[in-house]
Image (cartoon, rainbow, N blue to C red):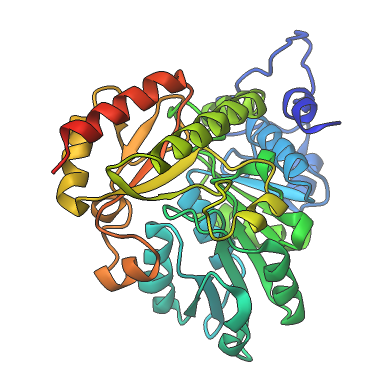
Length: 388
């Protein structure tokens, strides 16, 4: 099946009630036909539902869809995107292991890597976006490469093909945060990714309603990640899984509109007198536009820019917005403006933010599904009002 068809037609088997839409299974546990079935299920001799901390029909449907859409063996749903990222690392890494990660990553991911993993004896070196000097950071105990492309919030692009070849050459688990692109725009497994993580809270939901996360990838790696999550319990609720699975049915059409609006907004901002820098993967001025076009179907729904007046004008700009929401979320039907330095990446030091390409005046716009004229009008008015 094509992407759009799989997102709609992969579904839990119908019950005796012949429902067209998958029902919600709000149950904590499941019953067994007899003692032997109970024993064999707990012994992993057959597949089936035991307890909703382990599996649930709604979670299984979402996981089946995401594995198919990413083009990988298996997937696991989690309670949030950060739970997925943490599980993808802690389910596989051990004390004494070394991790490589790019500098341009989400603030909470940076916190996990720098503050929490060292407590379990796991160390990390951070890499530049350019893959040219990565080899010098590899150690005998390096086990995983973690990247985010496009990055949050600077929209840096990492060459997935080059990164995949690097990981294969050094026998590393290649772990890609694909949240900003979604599997509709980019499939990292095509370039050698072993694991793909998502905050399904974002574009996969698409309406800012629920939290959720996904780890997709090789079946052999998912075995240990699932064991880790079974024991530690970052389970996705059946309702959230049901809603996210339904949301995937409209992912393609939503992303097409997000991308159209974001590109139009980026072009408008590029010509604005009050803006000194604009980043969008499919703009010709993006330093890695050619790489983005090679590995992405379209440029995504995020635009970043910097106003000429720096931090103070950036704050005035945010306060002057009338329609756009001020929120730390993204991927919503509603357009959202965020100031990363004071919100999503505030826990990073100024030097770490600079290394990740996050200036004090950087503004991130998640282009929603409103009419593009209304989005541009609100931003234009806010830029005029906030002018120094």
